[in-house]
Amino acid sequence: MGLDTPSGGNTSHGYYTPHGRKVSSASIFFESLPYKVNPQTGYIDYEKLEERALDFRPKILICGGSSYSREWDYGRFRQIADKCGAVLLCDMAQISGLIAAKVCKL
Image (cartoon, rainbow, N blue to C red; front, side, top):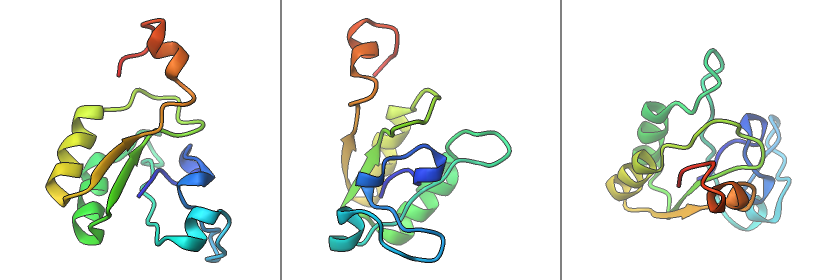
């Protein structure tokens, strides 16, 4: 379960087009359910994410994305992953340099 690509996520986390076409190998070989940003605020809707995670019960919850330009609430992701029994994976490829320079928090 990863951030929807149009919301700033990465296609490698499993992406389907709006018509259901599987675009990445992750979506071909695994069942994936994305979470999205709130269209009014541009922020991840953590309450909706938790609700969907509890319904879907993913084996893995991914935080991190290619072009989500907001701070991630890693503590909230940890709580949601624990609550639904998922492994939490942080895809920090795009922000690792910012974290090393202490410009961004992890």
